[in-house]
Image (cartoon, rainbow, N blue to C red; front, side, top):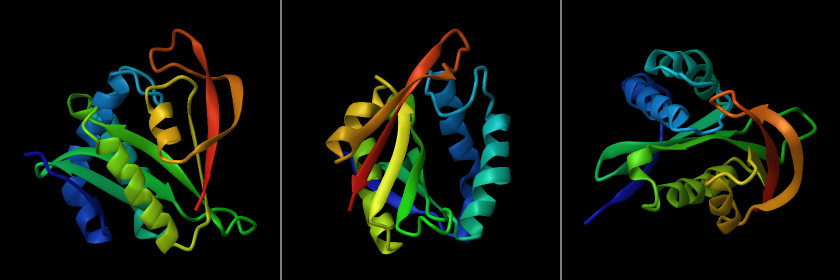
Length: 175
């Protein structure tokens, strides 16, 4: 029997999860995920991202960091950016959805997205936005989670291998 659990990390739990989160991120980027980084991407690069950028934002209360566990092993993560400009107090952004390549197609992403809805509501948000590579494996997940397409920007970013530009789809969900 497989058990999926989602946990929002508190400030005092961050450092204990740095290595496993970095491992998930390095594998995800090197597997082709378009989350803003280029290949090759090392675990050290990912560790620096979490400890230098994400953890300070979580500690400041600007971001929520969720971890998905499959049978008590961390296999996925996603972030919810809750601190946006003053004219957007009702909105939050989904960032860096990652599921370990070996754990995909097991409901991890769906569980993370459901948990994000709860986090957004708890933060008093009524609009959730995200962007994803157009045609990416995650796009159907976002649509199944209730997100609607707002628009597509062609040639928005490089693929992680640097060989081509891809379009980006902006999506939103009203809570």
